[in-house]
Length: 503
Image (cartoon, rainbow, N blue to C red; front, side, top):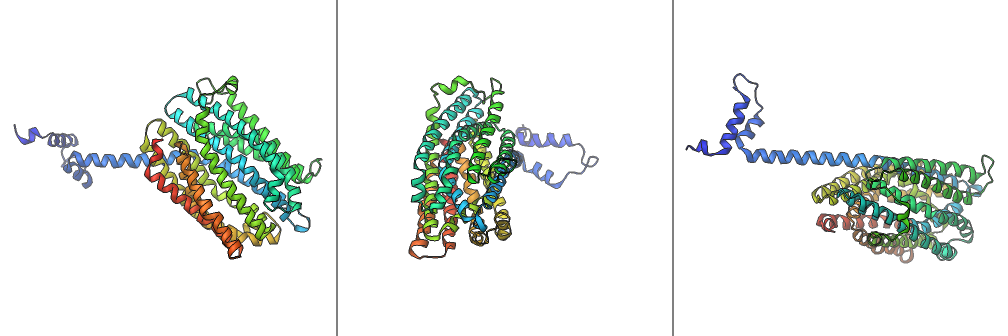
């Protein structure tokens, strides 16, 4: 037998040439096709692998963007609502003195963030467990994870709200709030605390829908809640449409009513789920011991710890601002963060989409797809953040003037907004890589990243600038950059190691 007859590669190439027909009478072949045929099956296989990898990257990118845009829309509406809310509060001060009401809202919001952050941790736990179960095609386990997350969320909210209610005044005084700021902040804080249970249940419903790749329903509900909140603000803060003028108390009441409205919408959506849906919920399941309750707590606890670490750092940061730079500095921070929160939205959206896709990929035992999702999400976040950071830093003063007419606050906002603009790429990178870890159920690594960033850099550098060097407040703002840079480095190193995929 000849070598031609023995070699299957040669026979395959000859067969393909026969199918092409006579080269003199048939269409001309591109030189790349002839080269690939001459190289044999090995080159064809490598080309096929490259084409498959390119196609897979495009598919993953499209899926991330498909899941991200509704989150961007809802978060954008919420952020705009927060800006309008701050703009309304910023016009309550007498003779243009907006610092007192703005600082009051800032202190109360920082205290409430402790509860809100714990609720976010439970929501992320819900996404991790439900996404894995959905990826593994196990709707019963997804339903158990959903009901267990609701149980943990409500219980945790009640406990933290009670502690915050009892300790509100001492904490405000410890943080250095002026007496006028404390008296303005407490009624607003109490109303917000009263709505926290409603918020906790809504966040779990939101997380369950996102774990099932339903991003549009939370988007519409978030938009509706924001519209109701702003209408109630307009009526209750300023006494419009026949309502009494309640100022900050009115803002607190508006928050509670809008949260109740949002929860009603979520409940209507959940009760309409079919029996086989991962979101199907039996009322009795909420009052029975749940086998996944411990798992929810196990995943959520590091997330709660991360948020506690971050919020204690924020409160310490507020202490530095209040003690060494005054109420104006606190008001600047209170206005500046919502102003730039619009630029963080893409990173938050990529993070949530990434968590869902990573969880479902690992549930389907496809670690390669999970890793690819994380890196593509990170690249999208950094590219978007760089453009938005440049724009927000360049136009920082005109933007600030849109939301307060207090010239002192506007002048103070410039350096702060520039610092946050510089931190944008690092901030959104750690958002996205943190989402990849949490989607895999790894909530410990983001905890360590937050601890290192906040307690080795942000707080010590702020104290060093204020206490030791008595430096300008610009150096306190710059501490933010080192915080977010450090967290992005820790999370990037961890993601590259890949240990998160084996949890």
